[in-house]
Length: 188
Image (cartoon, rainbow, N blue to C red):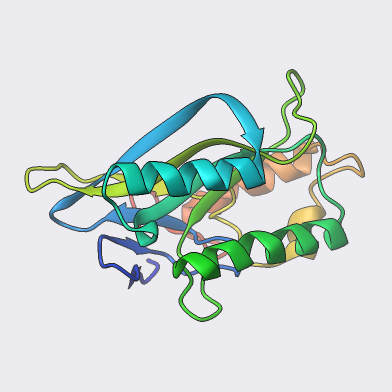
């Protein structure tokens, strides 16, 4: 089972993963995770401004931000992915969310076939709110089962980023306790 760390404000815990995102988040006792979905995805810069304004409006610190769901027009090149993540992480650092080089925020980033955005866009985000009677709530990252072994994971995809049968077989094994993934039933 993975170990977790508390967030900067102590309202959630997370599974440390890679600098781009965590493996997942779970609300601490006395808090719940609230999800806000935008009516239509907006460019990420605008989306981050929306998150900032929303958290201020509901009286929550920026460090309560715990997950985001992104949409991209196409899969990134490795260099493009790295450049995007550095910009994204710098904003989180400005907000006081990062813990050194550790990113506690869970993230998904999908490339829809229909309704592709023109640029990387925010679809939804999650944050914590105090709630003494809250039931357990959590969010997993889009590739939280990965362990940072890009070459091994890439081997299951074609050059366009489509999952091949051997990739689906590998994904199917990811939750059985092998390949560094948690066994069935494990939570962040």
